[in-house]
Amino acid sequence: MIENEIGGSGKARAVVFFALIVSTGGVIVALHYVSSYGPRCRHLPSSTCINNLRQIDGAKLQWALEKTKGTNDVPFVKDIAQHIPGGVPNCPVGGVYTLGPVAESPRCNIAGHALP
Ligand SMILES: [Zn+2]
Image (cartoon, rainbow, N blue to C red):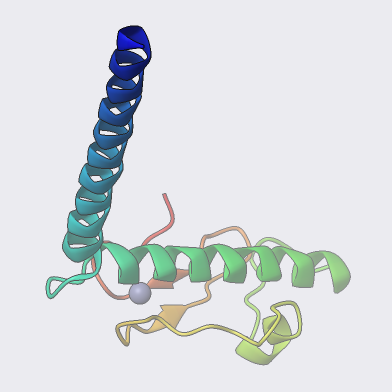
C-alpha cells in the first residue's frame, strides 16, 4: 500500500517535471519567435530573399538548358518566370533583383541578401 502511494506520487512528480520542461521549451520557442520575427525583422526577410534568389538561380539554369544558352547570356524576367511556380518572386523588403548572366548568381541590392 505504502509502496503504491510512493510510486503514485513519483509518477505525478514526473508528470509535473515533464510539464515544466514542455512549458519552458514553449517559452524558449516563443522568445526565439519574437527575436526572429519581431520588430528588428532581420532573420525572416533575408532568408526569404535568399530562397527567392535560389529559385531564380535554378530558373536561370533551366532556361539556359532549354534554350541552349551560354554562360554569358542574360535572361529577361519573362524568360525565367515560366520556370518558377507563381512567377518570379520579389524581395520581401523591396530590394531590386539583378538576374545577371547564367554563370553568375542573381543578386538583391539589399545588404545581406545574397546567395552564399
Ligand atoms: Zn532582398
